[in-house]
Length: 220
Image 1 (tube, one colour):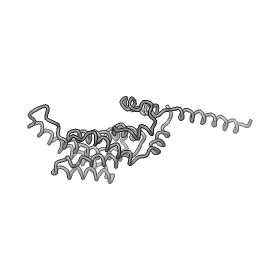
Image 2: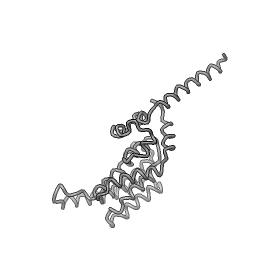
Image 3: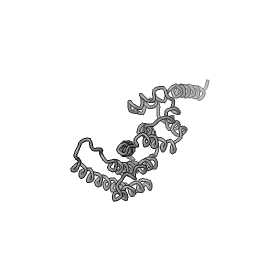
């Protein structure tokens, strides 16, 4: 056998072994490779990717998977933030809309950082005022603060993405979901909001796209 034939035979064997490894790897195995959180892993159990993607009602888990497989999540997280904009007081809505629009347009990092800082300053000032007049620890944290933060984090996520700060990007997209969910919780619509967030992500990303991204992940 010629050396080239031997090399081809070895490579064919290697590819075959690699394929078997991928074929036998469950969706949960892939998630473990990606360092998914324990709650996500426990919920997935023996579910296939298809079963998990179609039935998941925790957008933070879905965002974790999408961020770790390098999807651009700016538009869907802006959609999530916009869902709770109506909870922001009218006098503060303009800066939130500006931040979300800047994120959608992929504005330069300075503009996005300014948008994030402006909303955060507004929310912090409102937070301080609220704490000053709160008469009981049982008083609910206003949904408006969390809704404003959702818009701020959308801008921050876009800034991190444009600067290629992948670690910060993953955190900020998760924060958008958490802030929007808390806003919904404070206004009494948590379960509906969590489902809507997941539906938004399923609208943007198909199972085939997610599967392809997972298959591109290197074997451990």
